Length: 242
Image (cartoon, rainbow, N blue to C red; front, top):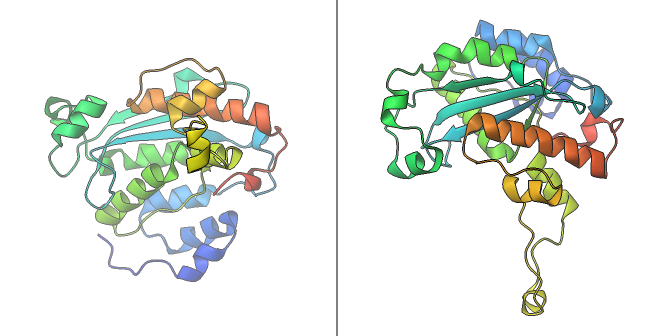
């Protein structure tokens, strides 16, 4: 593990392409350095021209400091299509035992992870698959936070990247999704921005959840529908990423 200090906080206020250049200079791990050196598209890039990759993690819980990643699904795609032959899916071994509750949710068992690699063993492949692309997730506090913590524990430096968060987009599109007490008495229901419920609003098919690859595909399709219904292919990606 590197004993170098974290990058200067001043870097974090820079536009994403400049952050990537600065972080490439201070990253000692060759895999992370290569990821940053590949670069990040400018904020004025039309979302229809940006290289995208849907990403989903299944984890042992919701706290990145207490829980761990157990599977990763990646789906490179564009607004025009999803080449399923390019998808990636890994089961990885967490450092702590699986919780009974998490097994019930995602179905990954002790026997599944017994011979699975640690995330560091697949890190080069993972970062190569992400390099140059903008990750698309549904609730960024899982994928971005868990990957950051996993790298801090293994190589001594976290990771930073912009994301398109389909949950955040749904929250923006439904600002009044939580009805007032009076509205509830009048029968108004809250609007769910969970992945499956968000897909229903766009008449997308139902998929069984809590499989990282299937959820990544579902997230890619959701973004395609969001852009088609509420934005345009020439919307600058900087208007959407966080």
